[in-house]
Image 1: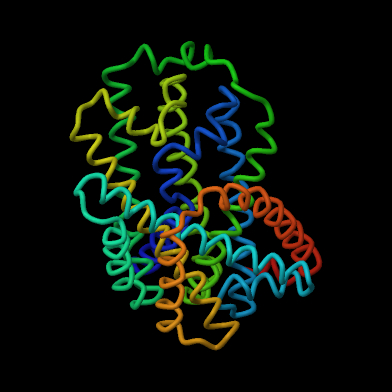
Image 2 (image 1 turned 180 degrees about the vertical axis):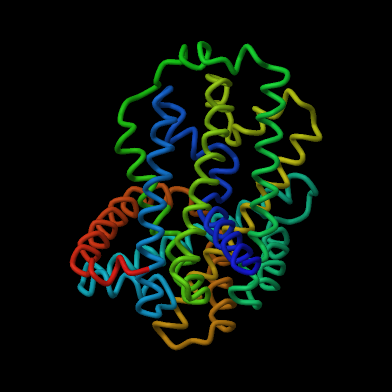
Length: 354
C-alpha cells in the first residue's frame, strides 16, 4: 500500500512538473491565458483541470494497453496517417524549440546575476540535466518529486501572506471589480489545455509503461490535475488582485511577491529556474525516447544529440518562431485530442476495463 502511494505521488509530481514549466511558474502563462478574462478565468482553470484528468487518463490507458514507449507511438496508433506524421514532427520541433529557449533563458539569467558568459550559463544547465537524464525515467521522477512540492509550497506561502496581511485586496468584492481585458476565454482554455496535454504525453507515455498499472496512473493523473488546478487558481488569484501592474512585467509573480521582501522574491526566482530546468529535462527526455523508438538510437546517445542541437539553436534565439509555432501546435493538439476520443469510442469495451 505504501509503495503504491509513493508511485501515485511520483506520477502526480511528474504530471505537474511537466506542464508547469517556467511560463506558468513565472505567472506569464496564467496572465495571458486566464487572468485577462476577469473573474470567469477561475472557471476556465477548473475546466482545464477536468480536461487534464480525462485526456491524461486516456493517454495513460492507451500507453499501458499497447505497451508504448514515446509520444510518437501514441500518435501513430491514434492517427496512423499523414496527419499523424505531421503532428509528430511539429511536436518534436515544438519540444526542441522549447528546450532551446530554456537554455537561452538560463544563460541570460545566470549572466544577469553573476556576469558570466551566457553560453557558460547554458552549459551549467546541460551538465546538471545530463546527470539526471542518464538515470532515465528514475531521474525524471526524482527531479519532479523535489521541485514540484517546492513550487506548491512557495506559491501557498505567498497566498497565505496575502490572506494574512492584504485582506482587503483579496476580498471577493475587490476581485469582482476587475473587468475582463478581452473576450474568448473558452477558446483560450481549450488551446491551453490542448497543447499542454500533447506536450505532457511525451512524459506520460514512458512513465505509464514503467508503472504498468492503469489504476495507479489514473489516480496519479487525477491527483496531479487537482494539485495543478489548485496551484493555478492560487496564481490566478494573486495575479488578479495585482492588476493592472502585472501586465508591465515579464515575470508577473516576482512583482506579486515584491511586497514581502527580497527573501521571498529570491525564493521564487530559484523556483522559477528549477521549473525551467524541470521542463528542459522533460523536453529532452521526451524527444530522446522518440528517437530511441523511431530511429533505434540508444537513449543515452540521443540525449547528447538533442542537447547539442538545442544548445546550438539557443545561441541564435527562437522567440519569434515559438510564438508562431504555439497557435499551430495548439490546433494540431486539438485534432489529436479529437482523434483520441474517437479512438476510445471505437474501443470502449476494452478501454473501460481498468
